[in-house]
Structures are given as structure tokens and as C-alpha cells.
Image: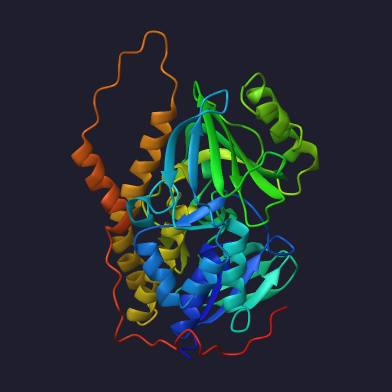
Length: 404
């Protein structure tokens, strides 16, 4: 072991993925999560391009694929339910509109937790309340009362990162709303879904249904334009009122889907937003995943960025002999062009959904060659070093630590 003690805030995807690689590089890792337990369900997330190689290097390819949604493809529909376009999961080598590795966020989180739980300390139902750092470490006060010292602290606590606000400043400085709101929630599969996603779009709004492995359930998906967004991300009642209001009068199966709003176990609604920062570290504190560089769900690459970023962050810190300044700088230099390509994809996708106004001119024809080049950079435009000279305990060599 290196003797390095690392604290990771957030136990969704980026946090446990980073814990996997920090542990393999020799660090002692604690993950703190403010929720009392792992959150199940959630929207489907994808692993495309180079992210699939990261999963393979983690030794988790079989476990991840076994938990996938097994979606065969997607149909876009007109208001009467007639198929307009068809997309298959094996299109574009499995990296298309429906990815070959498509998994519910909660299921991927569970796979990553199961992989790390025996070698990483997980603290649920707690959070960082205060931290102060000096040249040699970071003193952390937890909301539950514990006081501990770490060599490194990494915020992997999402778009609304509390650690980012604590160390770097208020969220308004970094979160860029893209003018769209997304909602997801589980519903009974009374719609006859059978491995095919259904999607209806009209005038900037959309409603859809996504199949899951449990054939008795489905995931409802809705989106609507919203120039601003001021609903608290923890006020579920206000979010449901907003969704009902903005989706009123929308066609297809939307009224039936909305009938299940009050009995769903896992409602989620939030703005489509990106996080743009000049730097992702300050002293011994760094950021990863959506906390640092959210590309928005519309990029299709949020999970990929988290997985690739976790691999590179742990690798560069270890390669730098755990010097935070050098390690964080190398991680950022490798990641930033990859992040920027994916953020551009996210912005373009949102713009493509905007309903044209009565006075708007027709859109120019897209530069297909430039678009394909951008997509390739967003999927595979980053090198994954082997880190041959860096310690690696291997996926199967797990040091014991008692979760609490």
C-alpha cells in the first residue's frame, strides 16, 4: 500500500469507479454518500467507445453486460403510434443511438459497489460538512461529527456537487442550463413494451417509454423546453407539478403515462445542464464526473466521461507519486479535449430538438464530415495509458476493509 488516504464524495458511478482504480494503485479509500443507501433505478446510461475498454480493464465487462437493459433498439413514432424511424442496438458497432452497453444508472452503481465494497470503506448517510487543507493534507469534518484527515479529497457528487460549491464557489458560476428539462420515472408496463424503446417528439417536447429487464415495468421519459429553471432539485412535489403543467395537452400516450406520477417509486426531474470550469482541482481537492465536467444526458456520454476520468485520475496521481499538483494537472491535460468534444455533442443535440419559430430561417445543411469527426473524437478521442510503471494490485487482489 502507498499509505495514501483518499476520500471520495459520492457513491453513484464516478465515485465507486474512482475507488476501484485508487485501490488498485495502492491507496486507502473512503467513499462518503449522503443518501442512506445506493439509489436504485434511474435513467438508462450508456458506455460507448473507449469507455468500453475501461470497463474491460476493470474486469467488469461480464458483470456490466449481465445487468444491461437488453434493449433491441428504438422506434420514433408519430402521434398515432406509427413507426417513423428504426434504430438497432448493433448500429454503428454498438455505439449508435441505442448503445450495446445500456444499463440503468442504479444497476451500474450496484455493480461498481459490489466490486469495491470489500476493499473500500463506504460511509452512507453522511456528508462532508467542512474541510480545510494545508500543504500536507486535508482535515475533514463530517456532518455526523467525525473528524478525519486525508491526503486527497475528490468530489464525485454530481451536477449539484456540494464539495464543488464548498471549495470552488457557488454553482451559478459553473452550471450552464441548456434550455431543456428531463424527467424519468418507473411505470407499470401496461403498454406492451417488448425490448424496444418508443419515442414521440413534437414541437420541442418529447415523451417516451423504455423497456427494462423486468418485463412488468418500464421507464417513462419526458422532456420539455424551459429557458430557465428554478425548481429545487430536492423538491419532488414541485417537480411533479411542473411536469404535469408543461406536458399538458401533449399527444400519443402521454396522459396515460402521467397517471402514474403519484405512485412511482423513483421519480427524477432536473435541468439539462453542463458544468464548465477553468480547472478541476484546488490544492489537494479535485473533481470528477458531472461535478467537474457534466456534458448533460443529451451527450449520451456522461457515464463514459466518469469511467474514463476515474481511470485517468487514479493513474495520473499514482504516476506522479501522489503529488496532487502534478497528478491533477496531468489528468486535466488528458481529459479536457475529450470533455469538450462531448460537451459540444450535448449542446448540438439540444439545439436539434428546438422547435423552429414562425420567423426562423431554414437551418443550413450540416457538415456531415465535420460532424462524424466530432463524434469520433467524443467516442474514442483519448488515449488510455497502460501505466506500466505504476502499482496495480489487479482486479482480484482486494485488500480487506470493513464497510460501515
